[in-house]
Amino acid sequence: MSRLRGAFHVKQVADVTSLEKIAPDCDVLVLGAGAGQDFGDQAANWTRATFGRIATVIDQRVVDPERTREFAVALQRSGVALVDAPIHCEKVEEFPQLAATLCGSSHDAFASVKPLLEAMGAKVIHFGASGTGHAARLLVGAAATCNRMATCEGAAAGFANGLSIADMAMVLNRSSGVNSGTERVLPHLGTGGRTTEMPLADVAEEMRLVSQLAMRAGAPLLLANVVGELCRSLANGLADGATFDDAVALMEKAAGLRYGAR
Image (cartoon, rainbow, N blue to C red; front, side, top):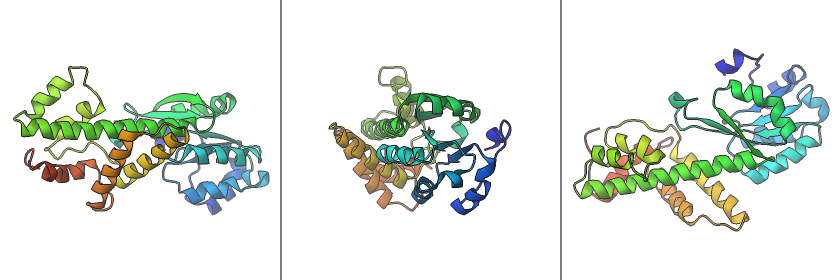
């Protein structure tokens, strides 16, 4: 938000009632990642008069791309364009270096808000029509989650066979096996280091959404479905808000080992 305030006149609200009061003074409405589904549903039912000056809605939530397309059609009836622009970044302190804003919309709508999106700091990528940004966000997240789970399983098998975490990290990160898991997760196993701030329950929900996305296209994600079930199982065994980092102890217990003191 501070990045935007430095380049644009920003008004921040927490509910639809307050939003209606400032709509006459705003050109763009940004639905942040934490905005609930109800918030978007209510906005979809507004009239042109309610939107005031607002010409574009930027949706940064993680939602089903099919709902995004329905949202775009509903907004279009009021003369408002939708740009889906969720951000992929697992840790706030890694923003914007390891972050990307994944966008879907018409070219004209994207061009109108591109300067605002770029002011947020993350790399901005436009994929195509409404819904493609949210589809890309789900698929990127699924790939990252599968990489993480494969890394954790491989590390457990290697450690149980006498390989050190440090040696596995060095070799994998200098080979064709390098990925986000080996670079960002493997070195921190057993140290108590934090590699993500995303709750496992949210990860499991994203994996459910990406499974639906693939099935509608006739391309079921068999590996991702298994990983999604594992995420749900881990989330059920931990406190609310627990992340993959908090699940390391459960993974150690399942493998009958312990990486080190935490």
